[in-house]
Length: 227
Length: 216
Image 1 (cartoon, each protein chain N blue to C red):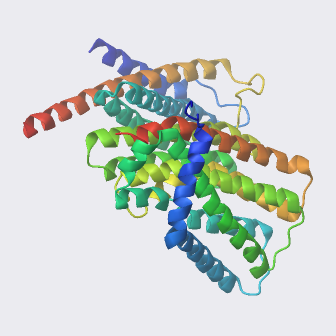
Image 2: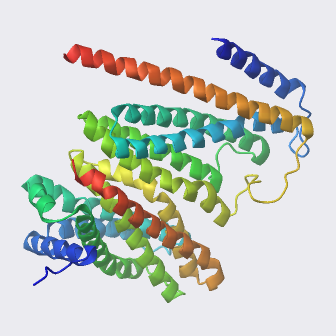
């Protein structure tokens, strides 16, 4: 019987299943993400109090919370491999690209489960109203994809550099800034409710950024992973 | 040696000409002269960052540690010229918009560019092993350079910027004498970059050789 030819994606899915299983045993990365997000959210909501926030500020705050929470948890998946010494086994078991895809899927999963919790809570606690709901959802989805897409390879770099405390935030912030500028602007537009023509350039920016980040990471990951 | 002398005379002539030969620009007055220094600095910054990325790509392909040092020198030079472009830009901004810094999309993008390469040097500083440092920082340099088009071309186009922008927007209205000196300055800056680059790479190679000798 010929061996089954698995594609990168299905092998990546196998890596994802492994990571999910490990994550559900300890729930370390997820708790770190969620606790960070909830803490900042409560702080923001508490300090804002009963003042109504302008959409400009609310959009910026939302992305600041998402960005820093993501930074708190996304490096975990690679750092944990280094710490438990399972890197070599994973290297033997899979090629670099499926490993990257698996970790990317895992980070996307993490950040979406974070966003599902944080974004509604943010809207409720700060008493905000979103006018264009679909555009808003699209922006959040694309923005979260971008956060995961660009920071996965940076997380790999950080884990190889010895996982020094805040290195991921330092490395990721400038690279993610074009994405954040686009996402904040689009979120503000979606919350105030504008015609699709106005929000479209921002969505294009987010889309192209995502494509660029994921393709470039896929090509470069081999050099980070193999030594 | 002869080239350095020519470069020195050339740059002196450009500086003199920018104040004596070029007439005040229409609409900008005396402030227009800063164009002769600002734009070439920005051009060299982008050129050096581009070269840093090219060096990084060829390092990943060939694995020659010398290419890593070249990438480092290029990133350093890019940062120096980027700072020059930022400073001259904010002087111009003070003169024509009334504020040194007002988060115009163009200023935002150049500030982010500086932060990206600052992060690059942080990353380099955090890794001991030279091969690992070379490889990881090469990957980061490539990723970083890929965001440059977003910052330099896309973001200032989407969000209204006050920065004059002539690339791909029809013919620019510019004085003939201004154009002559501007092009001369562009050539002078490029020569200056090539010279500093050569000296720096030689210095880095010698330092590396010395370190190797000390270890042996």
